[in-house]
Image 1 (cartoon, rainbow, N blue to C red):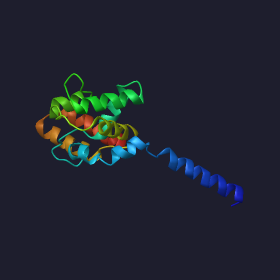
Image 2: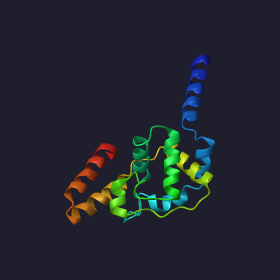
Image 3: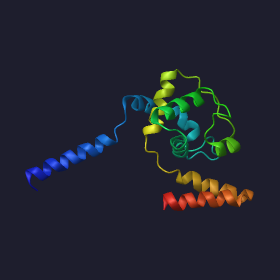
Image 4: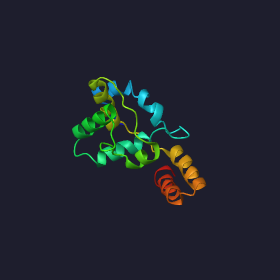
Length: 154
């Protein structure tokens, strides 16, 4: 390998690693995200909250900018209401989450982390949810979860 190729390889690696770096707010939010993961943990059986992978996708789909994502999520978490809820399916199945009375900057940091993190697909959650839905006779929901498993986990 030539010196030029080594420099290009190192530069490419640096750019790649840097592209996954979290912003300062997100890094601060990652430090307190464990509070959220108590309920949004994909291993919870039964589920206490929807997997963050899906929450993130719905917020991204239903907001026009990163700033709107952060603002809406922080506002919802501080004072959840049915009108503010983005994840209607989770709302109908799990109910409204409790308010998280945290300082506004902490909520902004956590929301920024949720925006920027690359959450893995919740394969274990879908597997459990499909089994539960099938046992309860909700075949449409079971099929939806199986499709997600096939699409993202196989």
